[in-house]
Image (cartoon, rainbow, N blue to C red; front, top):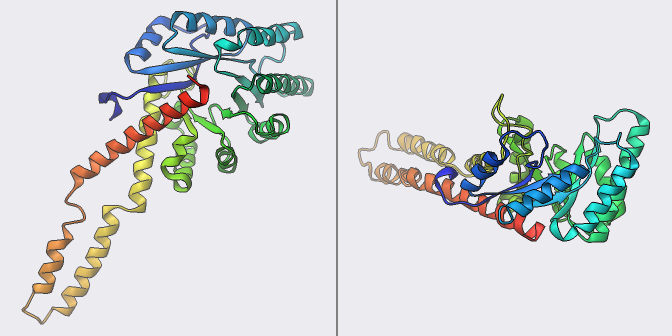
Length: 323
């Protein structure tokens, strides 16, 4: 639906700076042509430098976050410190610190300890800079949040990128004014579809005041065998719209109204079986059509829902990252 409308999008987390990215310029230009702004996330010293170069080249379309990826625990401490200093030096050119965090793919205890130490160091940096922080917490969502609360005291905004945590954690983040960012996983993951459906049942449209859309490209492609790209963030927003309309239909839909009318019809038919005067029955038959005559209106409402969701996500993302 949204592809034919003049809607603005933001890919809240991607890796346009990724060293092995294929056809970088083509992907960036395709995103721009599709009204998609990008926030690329440097996650190493080299990645932070490449991200900054991209922002210089595309100042209106690309913004930058800088951090140190939790999988890079084998790096020498000098590299970790140099990245830290690079972020400090270029703080005016970034919109958040991250991605930083914890990753359960690391199994060696010494590496896990080092991973947490790096996480704490960069969380402290985000607090000192008074900037939002983008969290990577695969498999350690709850543990990461415990550390976040300990260090930040909820004084800075938190974004759980590529959120795959529990319903309970999502609600705790949202209720404390923080954010979950949903990737193109939403296009194929039943877990994520059900999570959004459950959250919509609680927050309705207000969910999108604290929910961002991302691709994490070139990873988690919604199209099997293809490299993911920022223009696919439109698919995430469309999926939000589909799920929202499904939830709305379940709350108050034509089928529910028709079931009530059918019960009324059955009752009236029994009462009037021996009565040739069908005035009452005609009245109900005539008014029965009120409920579902406007299927065209229903489609218009669904389009409006999608537009409102896209606008909310776009405006909240801009406000969060002050761009």
